[in-house]
Length: 528
Image (cartoon, rainbow, N blue to C red; front, side, top):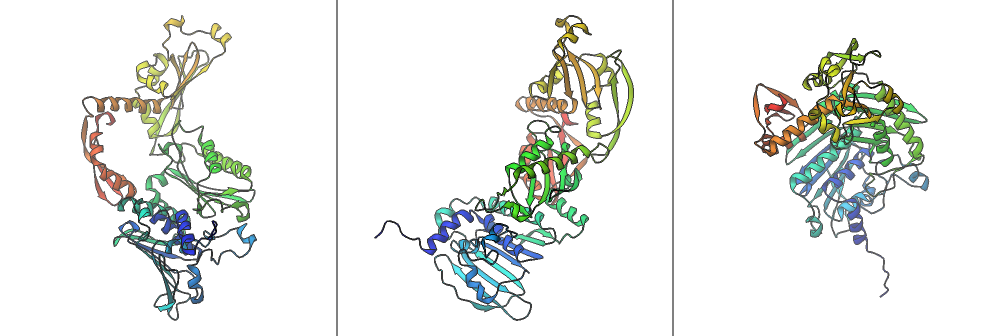
């Protein structure tokens, strides 16, 4: 027997399944992409036991002809590409023809389809090792239904790698959310164990699109973002860009689509980070929901088996366009446009060139209340800021964490102009000389200028105090006379309820008041 042998079709399919079918969520992704490529305006997804027992996708797309049904389950059989030129300009989500063959090799699959509302449909079934298929009549409206049962029933080793039912469904839910955000004109329903999770109607107008965004990304994201739409050099970028104040501790709310395909790309991420680098603190991540439209010939989607990555033919052009568009959009945001909370007046003080300790004028600007409140919470009135030394104890942590930066002054000027006497008399963080835009404290010591972000410094100080309290006697809390209602996503609400005991340790008592509503009944005294 020769050492080199051609793999059997069954083994080839199972190897391909190892690349394409990682878990139930990847099956859902492949089947949804097929439904969208068929022009569906409505897709229903039914899942049982996290997808391991059943996944059923029903759509109203163009359907599959009777004679094509057996081929639909064959490997590398597709209606989406025919020539090399088609592969160089892929305009569909799927194109390799591996999905159904791979899925059928590790499950019990039933495919039913009809190309019109008249007459009956046809069905074909495949089960693991069984590669032969028979087409039989079936009652079905126009469109296609794919039913996948008992995933990995014939590959128990791979089934062991699956997580709990809840975790696997959470990943399915994440896939459905991402795809629903890519096709606003398509309606989606998702049920798990006969319980409706999502029921999304087609979104045809701007307001309907924003409603879907609020449902899937959370109302807070939509309330704290601006809509952008920019075109140049044959590229178009549109979508929602979150305000810098709505930053995240991790990059969990960055959705980027290229020609309706959800992708993760280094060029895109670098442009996004560069656009925000001047307005975000170190360690914070921006949130966005952005769509890039580009000629299919200028982007290669055949880079990764899961099609999560792309390669731009002119990556420098794309990067520069993204950076300029995002940077300009952020520069156009002024405090009066849209802020995290309602607006209120805050005072801004500038130092006189003749006397750096004397306020020159009192200006009134429209600032977000979070910025104005931070001025009061940090207990830095304009008299304190302009006449007293900064408290080293209050912002020492901010300096250590990089929230304060120092810039050396001109040595010759430093010798000629010394407002503070001998260097030994100057506190390490210097004396405040001005307040800038109600947000920053400008201080001077013998080394130069220190800029203090009052809001960030106050947050850091409170954070450190809460950490000390947690490690010591515990965080003291107080009940609210009127509970605070908080709008969140359903997924966030689930997580909050599951971690209720952890919240209580942090001094926060909460309960669920609805699918996307939490009631906060008790908060830490430090946050009163």
